[in-house]
Length: 319
Image (cartoon, rainbow, N blue to C red; front, side):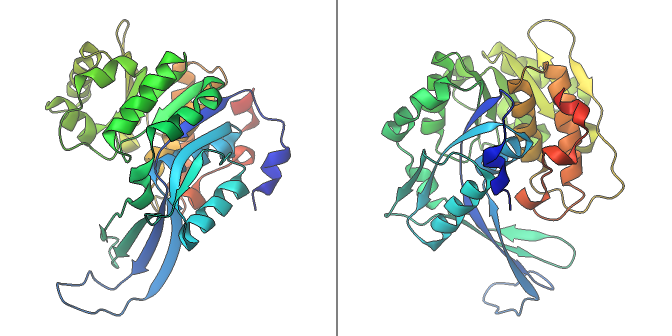
């Protein structure tokens, strides 16, 4: 149980995250079923996901005073998710409820080779309103870092970034899941740090980004549209920061003994980065530490359940 967190004396970092909550319903099967087939599975697991929730959880586990803005259905899944957030010690004052839609769900089938098929039902995630966002304004104002992703409708994300930016809070947009087309140009002026992986930056810029040079060129295109900095996550190869001025900063990937499950590693990186940056670490230092935290997550099964907490890390990380 993580309830002991609420009695902690927190580091000064305060992080606000707007994003989705999804309950993962995972069926393990010998192979993925074909159309019309009823297939006997081997086991079942329920997990808690959604990129926004994952990032909020990772920031909180490291010690951030975390505010999460989201929406759940008024159903048993919603109650379970709210209980889980409270267990982590995440402030759920702005996790709203809606009786019209279910909590976000993700039925997932995973075969014996690790291949999967996923259906995402956004449900209540899609119903977060401007009025609800406005109610969280004072709480956002007191944060150092504000994080959004692309799981919620684009209009509400754009509004959220504009609000946080107008309050002088450092804004981060994580462009996951990958957009199907470039983002509206007006969004970029409210983004201090755009965080993308290779497929996402290619989709955003319509440029190839398979080498470091190409990735840097694609990042410069995003900066020309108005974003202040671009942070590229390169999986096992590490991460790259491109800014308006100065040389790009490249941090090599952390090697681990064995990779068990990479799901949620990108969210672990971003939640950790937001936390370390919020307590006054430099961009480079925050990237290094976030790289390390995310690398630990791939050595365990699950998403939030694989994330390391403050006590799992070297004490030097927090000095």
